[in-house]
Image (cartoon, rainbow, N blue to C red; front, side, top):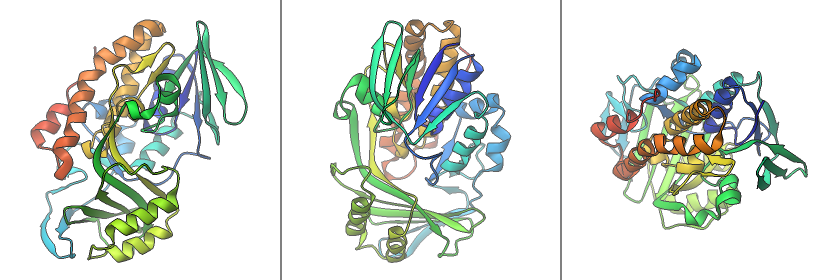
Amino acid sequence: MKTVLISGASVAGLTTAYWLRRRGYAPTVVERAPGIRPGGQAIDVRGVALGVLDRMGLLAEARHARTRMRGMSMHDGDGHERWRSTEMTFSSGRLDSGDIELLRDDLTQLLYRHTLDGVEYVFNDSLVTLDQGPHGVNAGFESGRHRTFDLVVGADGLHSKVRQLAFGEERQFIRHLGPHLAVFSTDNFLHLDNWQVWLQDGTASYCVYPVRDNTEIRATLGFLSEPLGHDHRDTERQKSLLAERMAHLGGDTPRLLEAMWDASEFYFDAMAQIHMDRWSDCRTVLIGDAGYCPSPLSGQGTSLALVGAYVLADELDRADGDHRTAFPRYEERLRPFVELNQALATENSGGMASEESLERAKNALSLDR
């Protein structure tokens, strides 16, 4: 049985583990965090990605976990409501759509539960070296251990360590889009009832919406800026940056910033994309944000992760495990789909991409070759 190391236990890594186990591999998932990461924003599963969940037998559970928004309201920088809609939200699109919006941590927990049988998980550890040879990859871990695997999959996000080790420094591949966003969880002190509130003033904005039966809110705060060069693990500095850049906003901004300081589940980063000429090197391959991050502005990062994992496993299966054949086929099959979805982020810079562009992008690939 061939062994595969998957770096990263989010949607891309967990879905890859599921499908490779189904194809007869022995997956090991390594994750820096002590467990499946909590928190995060609401994410979308759309188009062909719904077919991936269906083939996993998880579509009904995902639909049950979906958000239940009744609509949204838009406010100006002083907090005054300008318009509202009960037909759509910026985060999910039309409320009568067949697509699914659910919390990132609900989806990762669902995937995790369905991969516990036959997948080895190594938490509180991460890769530090990769030595690729003709017969395998020797992986060195932060814990000091060394193990050899037949294949390595980098599913470790925008700041992928696997990509750095196998392809070079991040600066070669990253394209900044302008916005910087933070996401955190707090109590529903705004007493929102399945309703999104957005505030925008041109250079800064926020969105808040309730989850967990209206007991909690997820807040997304952001501002436009040139690349900041910040340490993406220095949360205190990130919170300070956010407070400085958003202090001029009215509405509920002061209360949200106050709640932010106490938030234990906090994420902050620049909105950026990853563009690469190739996604594989010898026995190592990239998937999801590590190889082709479209940025959250596209609304398609989760769908790309789900579909990419399926296509990679499918091509390995079709090639009888020969990665030299499978990896180029995976890229050839997936790249047009990736390019259409990455293009959504530019159109989406002011809100939602057009329905026509979104429909074309989310259905631009068939799961059956």
